[in-house]
Every structure is written in structure tokens, then in C-alpha cells.
Image: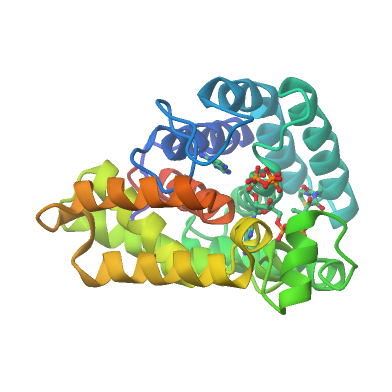
Amino acid sequence: MTLPLRSDAPLTPAFIGHAATLALHDELALTPKPGLVTLIDRGAHSDMDAHTFMRSLFALRRYFVQIAEAGQAGAGFPELERLGIAAEARMLDATRGINTHRGAIFMLGLLCAAAGAVARDRAHAMTPSVLREAMQVRWGDALAQRSQRAPILPGGIATRRLGLRGASEEAAMGFPVLFRTAVPTLARGLARGLSPRLARLDTLFHVMAVLDDSNLAHRGGLEGLRHAQGVAQGYIDRGGSAAPGGLAAAETIANDFVVRRLSPGGAADTLAAACWVMRICGAS
Ligand SMILES: CC(C)(COP(=O)(O)OP(=O)(O)OC[C@H]1O[C@@H](n2cnc3c(N)ncnc32)[C@H](O[C@H]2O[C@H](COP(=O)(O)OP(=O)(O)OP(=O)(O)O)[C@@H](O)[C@H]2O)[C@@H]1O)[C@@H](O)C(=O)NCCC(=O)NCCS
Ligand SMILES: Nc1ncnc2[nH]cnc12
């Protein structure tokens, strides 16, 4: 898929990194969202709200620029990982120990590094497929090796136990859900004239329907994950956000997720990453 290159976009590490912060804000500001924190509610979370996310975003804003700079400078995987681990520590410091953006630090961090590398080469326009290839060519082997390590966090442990594909495996495969589902859905929605809000909501549901989200697996087991995937597919089958009553149906689903304590944190990160791709490769 080819998206138009922004003619006015200065593809510097600063631009790439700031686009990541803005994309995370795009995701946070979207409402209604099933089980996830928004600017006006906590979803299924008792320990965090929009303030927690804003503090985390503030703490991470330099990281996304730094990792784009590292990609531009030709850094190897250990350097990216070092930056990611330091950013995680800053996030936990800013949120007093609450995990707001661990997945985004990993996923958007890698993508910013890939964008930095593409911008340096200047051989290609910045498109989703060029970005994906840049990531796989440079760090694919390291990501594949990394995905073999034993997980130590609850989400990763749950996905491994259930034989699912967690964040590490998605990365090792070049983020197929991001590039084959999220970006095309968001681009199509905007191209057919949906508002950014409705296009993002549809994208979130499309991602939820197919992603092995480790947060859902950790909190709700396989049953919770399959419930969320089925509900998301049903929403899409009924016409999504632009169907009559589409927003009201999304609110009903949001309430159901709160009752069940389900939160699709991995799908939220994938939506943010798709918003970032649109900001980098096309109109936001
Ligand atoms: C590689 C790591 C990211 C850890 O890997 P692990 O194997 O443990 O991976 P996962 O648990 O599968 O995923 C980690 C986070 O990624 C998001 N995510 C979940 N599923 C997927 C998926 N299928 N594909 C992509 N991304 C996915 C998710 O993050 C989001 O949810 C978090 C909020 O969750 P919350 O509900 O609060 O849950 P908990 O904190 O577990 O608490 P409870 O309240 O439920 O008890 C939030 O972080 C979102 O971002 C997964 O959590 C990694 O940790 C690592 O190695 N990091 C350092 C290296 C690095 O960052 N490098 C960067 C450049 S290389
Ligand atoms: N808005 C959100 N609420 C809860 N967890 C998340 N992980 C990423 N974005 C999130």
C-alpha cells in the first residue's frame, strides 16, 4: 500500500519522535474505548487515569527523538534496547510504578528507529512497506532471537503459556497486525471521509478482532481474549462506527469491558502506531 508522502514533512528525528508523542495522544484522546483509559474515564483501570498517561507521555517525549536519532546513526539492536529499558525506567518513575506505555516504548521505539534509518538513506519515500522492511533488514534477526527468550512479565508469560503471539513475536514478524490490518483500515476510513475519531475507532476494533493481546490474556485468560475478539468482530460486521448507532454500540461495549475488567492495551498501542504511520507517511 502506498500512502502519499507529506510534501511539507521534514523527516528529522525530532519530527519522527514528536509524531510518536502526538500519536500516543491521538490514542489516549479517543473515546469511547473498551476498557482503556481516555481523557474522561479510567476504563477498566483502578490505578491510572489520563493524568498518569500525560505524565508518562511527558517523560517519554525525548526517548522517541533519541531512538530515531539512534536509527539514523545506524545503531545496532543492543543500543535500541538500552534506550528502551532506560525509557521504561523513566516511565515508571513518572507514573510511580504504573505501566502505561511499556508496549509503546517497545513498538513505537522500534518504528521511530526504522524511520530514522530510512530518513538517513533518502533512497526511498517514507511508506509503510519501506518502514517495515527497514526494521526487518536491520533488526529482524535480533528481534527473532529476542522472541525466544523466556518472558518475565505477566502478559508475556500468559501469551507463552497459551501459545499466543505476544509483542515480541509480533515484532519478530514485522508487526503484521499493524501493517496488514491497522494501517490499511485507518487509511481506508480516512479516504472514505470518516472523521479521524470514527476511523480510529474502527481501526481499534479491527485490531482487537485479530491481535493476541497479552493484556487481555493476562487479565481474562483465553476466554477473555476470545470474548474481546468476538465482540470486536461483531462490531465490525454490524457496520462499525459509521453505522446508525455505531458510537452508542461502542459505548455499550466499553461498559461491558469495565464490568469484565478487560483492557486491550496491545491493541491501543497498535492503534497509536497506526496513527504515527499516518503522521509520518501521509495526512494525519
Ligand atoms: C518486549 C517487551 C515489550 C516485553 O515483552 P513481553 O514478552 O513480556 O510482551 P507482552 O506482554 O506480550 O507485551 C508487552 C506490552 O506490549 C503490549 N502488547 C500486548 N500484546 C501485544 C501484542 N500482541 N502485540 C503488540 N503489543 C502488545 C502491551 O502494552 C500495553 O498495555 C500495557 C498496559 O497494561 P495493563 O493493563 O496496565 O497491564 P499490566 O501492566 O500488565 O498490569 P495489570 O494492571 O493488568 O496487572 C501498557 O504498557 C501498554 O503499552 C503489553 O503490556 C519489553 O518489556 C521489553 O523488553 N522492553 C525493553 C526493551 C525495549 O523497550 N526496547 C525498545 C526498542 S528495541
Ligand atoms: N489508553 C490506554 N488505557 C490503558 N492501557 C493502555 N495502554 C496503551 N494505551 C492505553
